[in-house]
Figure 1 (cartoon, rainbow, N blue to C red):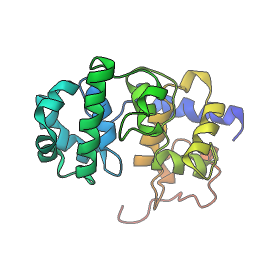
Figure 2: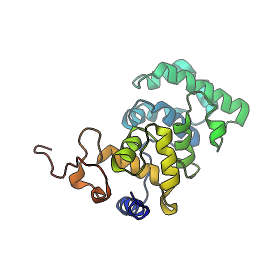
Figure 3: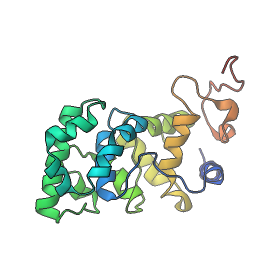
Length: 216
């Protein structure tokens, strides 16, 4: 894609959804961090179902410690890898209480030292809560970046680097939301719904599905 095409790509996505938001449910920065950590290899829908009752009871790292690991497991046992995730959440909560006064740090270097928090999770928190220009490359963004030609790369890190370099200023904060939502609902893995895509003419994907399959 050219610079002009990339600008138009995001302009259309922004016009269609001016205020994109994560679909994870949370009430504060700590709950967001926990929700994102739990969402690895799980759906936002599944995480939300598990965290509604949890977050009604737990709003702070200390409250999570008071709940205890077994209590946390009871809330999140429907989520994949819940045992290891529970252990990580308890440990990161302990660190937040002991080292950060119960507050979530606002920089990637500190966030990625927390158990269960990788670069993608840190980027989501920095973007969604602190409004920083970060690009959290999940499977949807990786696919959309490569398929459309917007940001090609063999690894999430390579795609992130391309996005960092190529996404124009007006769209940098919202970019990762638009790309995730586009990949989740339009540019799907098995059959991209090109027939209703607002940026199909800007996309370099050669096998576009321009007619809606019967029965869909």
